[in-house]
Amino acid sequence: MKIAIAGAGAMGSRFGVKLQSAGNQVTLIDNWDEHVTTIQQQGLTVTTDDGTDHVYHMTAKRPEEVTEQFDLVILFTKAMQMDQMLQQLSGVLGNQPTVLTLANGIGNVETIERHVPKDHVVAGTTVWSSSLTGPGHITVTGTGSISLQAIVPEKFPDLPGLIATLNGAGLNASPAENVLAAIWKKAGLNSVLNTYCTLFDCNIAEFGSLPNWRTLNDAVLNEFEAVATAAKIQFSAADVTALIAAQFDPSKNGGHYPSMHQDMAKKRPTEIDFLNGYVAKLGAKLNVPAPTNALLAQLIHSQESLKGIK
Ligand code: NAD
View 1 (cartoon, rainbow, N blue to C red):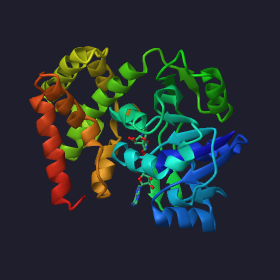
View 2 (cartoon, rainbow, N blue to C red):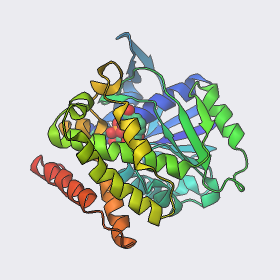
View 3 (cartoon, helix red, strand yellow):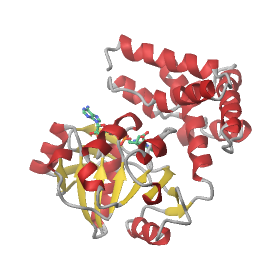
């Protein structure tokens, strides 16, 4: 299959390597000039669990250099970069490839639908992970899985075929029954752990050790539940709280600093407007107040400003 990875950062590069290694024709597309040049000249270096480096020779292009058509476009930009990437790839999207997004945050499907007919869009969530260590270099640990669903299931021609392609690359994909609920669930978790760990400069276990973590957690998730209910999206604050509590164990995810914390440390923009910020905005539109989420979004934006992040 001819596959474009649009947004070939940490996750896009990891998926690109796996799909190419399984025999697909993969093109990495990215706007970070130095990253693209490094991959073109030296290949993509992947550091694995045991600390060894593996170099993969891959096709890498800037969006304006892409002229060919693809069967599948996997969008792996950050949520706030997606609209620009889709605009840049308008020529590529003319042939109506399947467009798959597994990016975090709420609202990505709405962004894609502004550029691609709904019938071609597949969305999901993933627990694979990866870090961009530098231009042309990722570090990967552990394994993961993908849960995905077509946005208009009755019109999408071949979801089993797409799942088979992903599974042929060992990506552990399976169909989701309610992908919007899954996206909101993951966003709820991220809107607690990412946001507070970033503000407090702590890891997940340290957040869980706070005597008032439940108060902080509930202030976010009760608003999520009220806004989701008004938007007719299935969301249970209790279920997400249980999932969050399960992350505190230091032998599991407790020692992990969430991605927003890493973005802030690297002076990169965060996805806050697609997490707490999205719920605050949607709440305002639906007349469901979400002041805690609105304030948290403002606090993260203030921290970005103080660090000179644009
Ligand atoms: P990333 O930051 O590694 O890459 C996203 C884009 O930002 C890429 O186009 C990349 O080239 C660009 N970029 C990164 N650093 C840059 C720099 N210093 N200068 C210029 N451009 C730079 O993002 P990611 O971690 O691959 O995440 C993609 C999506 O997947 C996000 O929605 C994220 O929340 C989600 N996600 C990530 C992980 C993870 O472990 N990384 C896990 C699950 C979901």
